[in-house]
Amino acid sequence: MTSTLDFPVTPAPPASAVSLLNQAEQGLAAAAREADPAQRFAESYLCALRAAAALLALRGRPHRGRAKPTSVWTLMSTVAPEMREWAAFFASCSATRAAVQAGITNRVGPRAADDLCRQTGQFVDLVHRAVHGARR
Image (tube, rainbow, N blue to C red; front, side, top):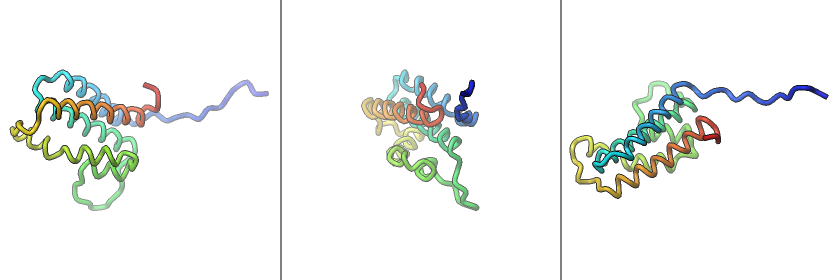
């Protein structure tokens, strides 16, 4: 009979993934408190970008040689196929986020901002589980 048990050692996630995820989580808390719907929308989108970047830092970027710049949503679909629907959803929000950053805020009402903030929270939770495992 042995006196020790050997459990597989789970490597720690890359520091960059943890840092990006922390920024996404903290930013989302701030976005939820933002009174201006357009700002809440833009900040929520930025948090989703940071969470996606954390996932890319965790999984690695596919080697493409001399590839032209690619959106994080396209890369995420390749690196994490189980997140394709999230990637498509956030990609569909990109034009609205760009408009808000350009000062065109009439495209975003309170409901759209609240919806994006809530959906970003769900996405950040999924990325948290990918980075840290099931424990929360």
